[in-house]
Amino acid sequence: MRFLLPTLLLGLLPVHAADTPSDLLRFSNGDRLDGTFSGVKEGPVVLWKRSDVDQPVEFKSTQLRQAVLRGGHAVKPFADLSSVALNNGDRLPGTVIAMDASTVTIDTPYAGAVVVPRNRVGMIAPNPLGGKVIYSGPYSEAGWSIVQPKEDEAAAAAPPLNPAAPPPPKTEGEPAEKPMPAWSYSSGSYYSRSGNAGLIREVGMPERSLLRFQLAWKSRLALSVAFHADLVPAPEIKGGEDQKPMRQEFGGVQNYPKLFGNAYVMNLYPNYVILYRSGYDKDGKPVVERVQSGTTSIRLSETGEAAVEIRCNRHSGEISLFLNDEFAMQWTEGPEVAGAPYSGKGGSIGFQVQGLGAQVRISDLVVAEWNGMPDAARSLQTEDQDIVLLANGTDRFSGEVSGLNADKLQLKGRYGNFEFPMSEVAEVRFARNRLAKNSQPAADLVAVRFHPFGKISGKPSEGTSSSLTLASPIAGKMSVNLDYAVMLDFKNTNSFLDDWDPEF
Image (cartoon, rainbow, N blue to C red; front, side, top):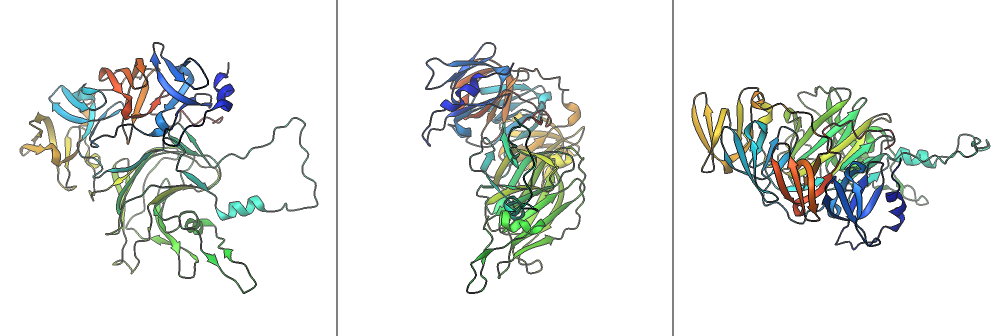
């Protein structure tokens, strides 16, 4: 039986001040309800408060998909970006303060000291990313825009091929056909299912930037990713004295300047990657040029998912691509290369799916400052060796991490024992064969997601609007301060297929 209460209340959504965004409840059937998260009680049952209802409304968590808190904004920011990744997919923001052969202790601002088994820790990152996070999300549609290619606009406005022909007859009772949106937002992700419109956002990419996102796709992957884009529209081209100014019309890859302005656009396919410069010449005509690279080959499945990371430096002209934390390829731009300056003039990002049949999901997106670190410890992760990558981006050591002593990481290596101050360690990847096997997660787990990244999952037992008691299958029982959270995910899953239903 379809749950009707949220639908009945949708017309009663109150208007909130811009500086105090309300919470948003999303239901499994697609309904949405504005209001305020008021807590959790045994069941688990979520309590939801509204100004037009005297008492909090109760919803079973099985009916819910997520609760977005305060429009995706945290009340309290984290002092630093250190974190610990568990082998069940959880990532706990916090600082490692103790470690031995059996346990790792993490100091967290939202749950105090959290102790987890050592064989459940896949990675610790004392100094990740190399700089501050500029943007993470998407937690809502706010700030994102959809732009339509010129040929799509022309097609929509074009007259019928035979104006004298009557429109086709409609079957009585047949509902009006609604066009499917090119991009749709749901549960912290953007989906592209039809059309080739662009999805863009100004994020303020700095001179040295890191753009990272989780990509999932069905059918054959064909995705364009724009970065350091200025979103400048096509300039007006003036005709004769009696002619009005015109806008440039162009299609194919020549569409990139219209969508993204002056930018770099990376095209990802299952077997290869192409990087383009996008912009306009002195006459205002669109210019799209391919950037040469020593290799263009990658290997991705026809349907699947991958972590995509682009690192770019406007000053040096360096652009690198990483897939699933492994180096894929690099380009070098700049005045010293064929006299072509760095084409990316702005701080925006954008996405466009090539082809009408492709289906793509974009999630877990982070834009951060980049410290120039050229590699990641994951690229050398092995079955039987721990890998320590230092913050200078070049030095890495392998062996067995034995513990932590006075804020120094201890490593037993083949050629000796080492100690590294944690302030100089970027990340540590632990050997795969020393990690415990994951069991099937319980269906009633809820994930608390943090800003700018991170999550912890567990079974909720009780809570208020400001805290939630969780029983984590790895970390045990804890009380989580929701001032640091931006979302409660009631359909917590790591499978990219679970939310890809045709009724979405």
